[in-house]
Amino acid sequence: MMRFCLKGPLLALRSIRCPKLNYSTMPSEVVVIADDGTIVCWHPEQHFPYQYTKPLPAEKIEENSVLSNRAKEAMDVFRKKHPEVVREELTKITFTTKHRWYPRARDKKAKKTPMDREYL
Image (cartoon, rainbow, N blue to C red; front, side):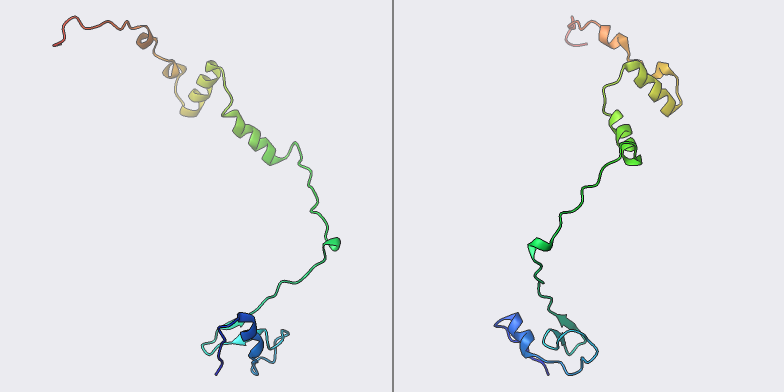
């Protein structure tokens, strides 16, 4: 029966040896097999000297790539367009006539007069 020490996880792992684990390349102090079939492993951070590291290479972005073309198409949606161009696009998208997309001028020109009788 294996017992874990609650004072420190590293001390508990070093104090336990597992005789069943003959096939592992890890030291027996690091790998623990619990009674219910659970395997507990400790992976210490490996030190790698800074002078041997390299920066990630900066990739050059192509101007004519598929993603950049799609991004330009997506940004065209947000660009201010002439009303005639907008009407053409709407008629092509919805398969309607251009007259459907003209604003109703009669609403703008209607004179806002106060009612002469309040009860009507």
